[in-house]
Length: 201
Image (cartoon, rainbow, N blue to C red; front, top):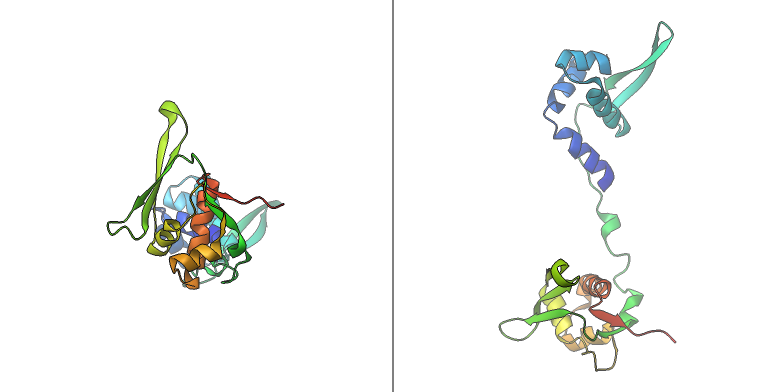
């Protein structure tokens, strides 16, 4: 089950009428949306949307039947147990040795950001970014993990030469197992124009 399917299931399962509808499905051999709606005094579209969603997720069997030449659907419970098995594998970085470690970066001049150091002055604890102008200006604060803070503590200043992510990680003594979170904060700060990358010639 992916996040989209899980969101659909969670949305419908949380409805106050979900248990009553499943009770009907468990009680009846098959039931139509109009039958279930009238039984529970619900709007037919509410029930139809619920039954269609559960059918699309594979929890119900949907059968088209005809009555006086007019087709409609009847629904049957397919499973006695419903479990949410959410696959997180696609969210993991594809490789621990990402080629982007060669990307050469530094802090952008006049980035409009404030780097706050930790109490022991050994790493950056958070970055505050100001977005917008005048009254529309808003503050975005990003709290950092310790490896991210150590990395940004060694980020070259705007006036310094660009350095590769790999080199900065070495200087900061950040282990390669933390690469994915380092790349994540670098990507975020590039997006917020706090970090700039060297242009390829």
